[in-house]
Image 1 (tube, rainbow, N blue to C red):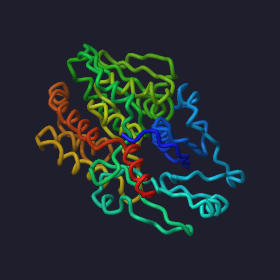
Image 2: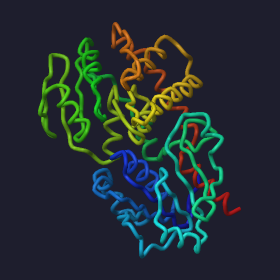
Image 3: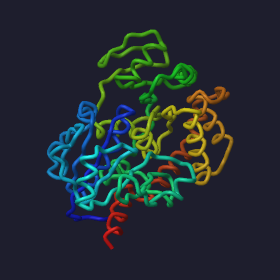
Image 4: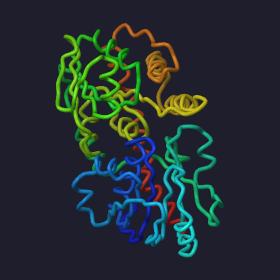
Length: 358
C-alpha cells in the first residue's frame, strides 16, 4: 500500500449524473487524502456533494472541498491534477497548469469494455500539455475501483444471519420495471422491506405505484411488501445499507461499485446513453463476470433479468425468487472477491503517479 506521500493533488468534477459523479470523486479524494495527499476537490455542485459527505470529511485536514467557479481566478495548481470524466477546465486554469508543469490525469468513466485496457495509462496531448488516461475497471489491465480500508473492515465483519424479512435497497432513475421486481418479490415466501431513497428513486416509485410517500414514511403495499422512504444519506451510511441488505437495486457508477463490493445480489440500472451504448457496456460487464464465475442457468437468468431491468430484454421466467436468490448468491460473492484482488483504484493511481516521477 502506498502511504505517506506528501504531495498536493487537485480533482475537478462536474456533476452530470446527480450523485454518481460526485460520489466517485469524493470517495477517491477521501481515500487519497488518507494516503497523505493534500487533496483539493473542485466541484460545480456543492449541494449534491454536501449531501453525501460525512462529518469525518469536514474534519479531514488533508481534504479540501471547493466550489468550482467559471474562471478559477485564484487557482494555484497542485503537483497533480485529475480531470474527472472528461470535464473541461477553463483557459486560465490550463495556462497555470502549463506554467506549473503539473502532471495531469484524465480519470475516465468505469467500463467493462475490453478496449479500455488498450487506452489505460496512454498519453493525450490536448490543451498544450501531456496528460494520461486512467480507467477504472474490472480487470488487471485497468485501475480497478476504490476499495477503502474502512469499507473492507466493514465487509469482513459483515456476517449477518439471514433475517425472516428480506431487506432491499432502491436507488434508481425513472424505471417502469420496478413494478416487475416488486411483483417477483411478492411471490416469495419471505416478506420484503424496500428502503427507497429520496429523489429520482422515490419519485419514480411513487409514480409507478400511484403513491405519495415522503421521506420518513412507511407503507405496507401488500402482505409481502413494505416500503420505507428515507432521506439521502452520507456515503458511509449508504455503505451500511448495502452491506445489511439482501438485494440492492442501484444505478449509475458510485452505487453500483459499492453494491458489487458488498458481495450481495444487485440489479444495475445503467445510465442511459445514445444509440444504446449503455446496453453494450452492460453486456460487456457480463462478459467480464463470465471470466470470473462459471456460466450456469442462474447466470443467464441473472443476465436476462438485468437486461430487462434496463428495458433491453423480456422479463425472464423465474418460478421461485427464493430459489433464484439462493443460487445467485455465490456469483456475487466471487465477483466481490475478484474486485478486491485487483487492488484499490486509489493505490493503483498512486503507483502510476509515482512512476511519472521516476
